[in-house]
Amino acid sequence: MATPKLSQRPRVLVVGGGYLGLYVAKSLQKKVRVHGGIVTLVDPLPYMTYQPFLPEVMGGSIEPRHITVPHARHLRQTELVQGKVTGIDHASKTATVEGVDGESFEIPYQDVVLAAGAITKTFPIPGLAQAGIGVKRVEEAVWIRDHVQERIQFADNTTDVEARKRALRCIVVGGGFNGVETISELQDAARVQAEQCQNITPADLDFQLVEAMPKIMPEVKPETAEWVVEHLRSRGINVRLQTSLGDATDQHLKLTSMANDDTKGQVIDEFDVDTLIWTAGVMANPMVRNTDFNIEPRGRVVVDAKLRTLDADGNVIEGAWAAGDVAATPDLTGHGLPDNTCVPNAQHAVRQSKVLANNLYATRYGVGEVADYKHESLGAVAGLGYGKGVAKLVKYPLTGFLAWAAHRGYHGLAIPTVERKVRVFSGWINQAIAGRDVSGMRNLQQPHADFVDAATPKKKPAAK
Ligand SMILES: Cc1cc2nc3c(=O)[nH]c(=O)nc-3n(C[C@H](O)[C@H](O)[C@H](O)COP(=O)(O)OP(=O)(O)OC[C@H]3O[C@@H](n4cnc5c(N)ncnc54)[C@H](O)[C@@H]3O)c2cc1C
Image (tube, rainbow, N blue to C red; front, side, top):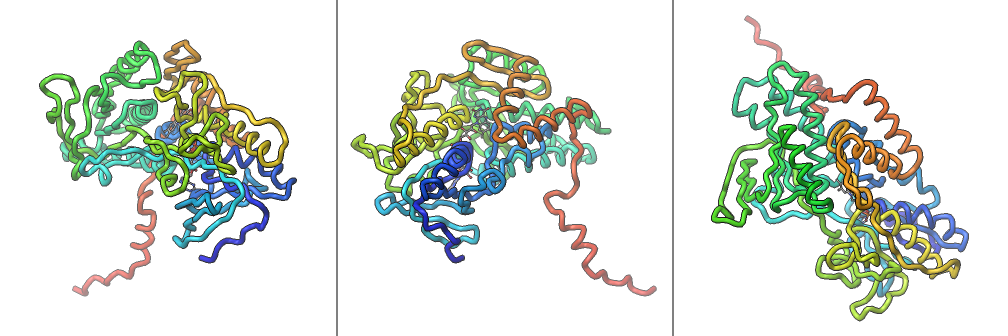
């Protein structure tokens, strides 16, 4: 592909159009134009994904498209380039981009904003890549939703006992917020679907949450985490603490003990599965390693509290900014990660985007003040299925219906743009009136099959 037609104006290049990048581009696009510049956003996807809603997509409570925010509709004054930044040479202020057709080209810039987020972090477990799927993209959430629904339909229609067990088994590895919300929403929807089946019941479902540590959800108080474990178990979810996935070859899982006793490292259970979901962590986008920026041991870009990148001697690098999941941003409240950096979450990303945009603008155009980023966490909220939730609001734990209402209220208002909020809230109203929609679609993975069959000439039956 030829290099896309690019503006000749001095450029603010935003690498990644997720939570941080979308808001930075939105804040700067008009202001930078007034000064004769241009904001250019590069992302392989044409939309931002509101990741906190991925579990509700898997559970069929939100239509997948509604959790994406299309760049073309909401960044009208930004130059949009669909592609993947594969490297940055800040010494020459040039980014290399792989376009949608796989060909590479370069984009020059005056200022760069690193906003490429995080990717799913895995470990070298045999067979995991083939057997498992992550929860980071809306496409993954849609696949999981349809796959689990299809497997339940299959189980309802098969008489093969082993195949049925395997189809109704769903293993989620990782007991953080993401894993807990994923298994809760999926099992909630699966129970509704199983109640509508003729040959299986909700009791036949085998949903298991596998966590290597003795406790789930490190973000909440131990009592709240214990409440969640009890709650999930009371719903029939098997929560396996101090257990890890040792092998997933050919979708035959081997679970090993992580307990501090003589079982440690031993295989404690093994079985076949049709659904294996991996939610055991994220890591900074490794793309930033292919740049001349200063990267700390956990793979994040080093920045100061003003969100300016720093070199290895702690000096500010001119014209380069970073925040969100890809950056090691100092947490000035003292309540961040053990290394005093911000927890990678949307709460920080959205607030950092405002500070970053203001600081970049003030530094480049001399308008306004450069300020430090400092935000005291508001807590955390999680949905555990319809009408059920858990939350830590500032310091106060909350469980059950009120926590669920807080989860929906907070995230419903936090998803960017009014039109997406309207879509999400109206979908929830539909669900409240008409119930959860678990009706599966046939052949979604191979929609072409019927047409191929219809369009393929058939041999005439031989004359008798
Ligand atoms: C399932 C799930 C649930 C979550 N729930 C919560 C929650 O309840 N509360 C909360 O606060 N946080 C939550 N988070 C975390 C939150 O979504 C992230 O912290 C937040 O999105 C980080 O914003 P970001 O802009 O740094 O990265 P992202 O939003 O991930 O955006 C990164 C962007 O960079 C793009 N990109 C990737 N590689 C390249 C490249 N090479 N070149 C150009 N662009 C690239 C991506 O396509 C993406 O658009 C959740 C995350 C997940 C996965």
